[in-house]
Image (tube, rainbow, N blue to C red):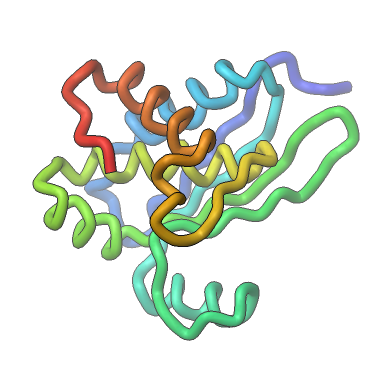
Length: 149
């Protein structure tokens, strides 16, 4: 029997100060907007762990901010999202925003990838439909004072 509402699991690992409620709300809002029942697991990882995942699965020997895996499922979307906590802190600092905002953005971004959204690489990336949806969801979550990346 399929669940009637999304199931969200968040593993903060060593990063106990992370705004778990905000991250969970970001994921749930993304799923609600898409109308998808899903099981999403999100883990916050250190740079070294993100670099290892990036190398092993994407062939890139560097850290990154988010990596997502859609695991399929029969009538149910299942996916894992990995967010680089230390990278999120750096990005928030560069953008002059709260870390919670950047973590919510990355949670939305990763969840959209699990749902099948994609974007081009390069400068046109931020103008893609996926990024437009991502930023609108973030504005809905946090209010109108969101720093579009």
